[in-house]
Amino acid sequence: MTNYTVLTTFPGGRSSANVGDQLIEMALKRLVEREKGPAIFLTIFREDPLDEQLDEINSTAAILLPAFPIRDVPMHPGCYRLVPDLDRIRVPLIPIGANWNVYPGDAESRRQLRYSPETTAFLRRVAAGIPQISCREHFVCEVLRQHGIENTIMTGDPAWYDAARFGRPMHRPEKIARVVFSPPLSAFYRTQAEEVLVLLAELFPGAERYCAIHLADAGVSPFADKRPTNDASMRSDVAEKNAFVRRRARELGYEVREMAGDMAKLDFYRECDLHVGYECHAHLGFFRQRRPSVLIAEDARGVGFNYTFGVGGFDGFVRRGPGSVRSAKEGGTSGYCVSEAEFASAPARPDLVPVLRQFLREECESRFRRYVGVAAYLDETYDQVMAPFLRSPPA
Image (cartoon, rainbow, N blue to C red; front, side):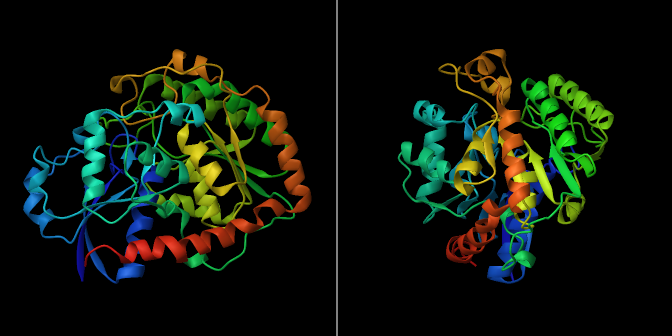
């Protein structure tokens, strides 16, 4: 039996407890055991220091880094605390499903992006110690290549894959009986989110409608441990936006579901027909169950997934200006829009709702014909790319 250290992005019963991060962690562990056999995982939150556990960590085969967040805060010791002297870590650091995130995350964002010498040095150090860095969408590979890192491979996100669904076709509903909406993270998308809620209520008046909120906020966090993590999700404006979305959703006949901290709550997606919203791992939660989903991109994460899958994706913004430089204090490890200056450079797309309405009508009429290839894409990417990658770490 092999031992691995996992530096998770899921902080457990503290702060936002983003259920999408938990999904990534648990999906990775299941896939590793599928490809490598039974394993023991030493799991530590990535922002916690490793000094006191370093001997135990160095006795494991490797340090797995699911959802490896490439953020210039800098990477070390910002995203990953690790230890001050990285030479004390004697086992390889293996990113799996690396991601990057800025606002708005379009082609101009990629063209402008330049990481600091500190973050670039850390990324190159990680890359030099392993054959390949696993990236969760194609633009991550592009961003790393811009910084001199060539040994990348697009494996997809571990959350793409549910082995119980391998080989199954996409669910193609004749009627939408259950539809799920997921809200944006940024408070600046509050008005657009309300418009989408209204649209779904109009298009599917007889359906059971749900508003699924994947992470807690400062107003409703149920967790005893209130220590903040290095992201912007606990901002007061996010809590105010979420309170508005919850209230408006209920007024429109939605059942609000709080998903934070418990991956089992995602199981109900298996019984739903359609997701439309902003939350990337609600989108992936549907795709992994072979169910249609529409992702409205509010930052680089959504833009990258939408490009990589090629179906069911729309930018929620429209580029108007060159963008602004934010401080790490403003956004921490979060990449979504947190300032007026950012939003001015790429405000909410004014024609999103009519475009979505037309798309959803076409897909309902064709029983989601444009999604037929998603299942085959997931199966082939896993078989040809992700599975071989997961078999490569030392045992």
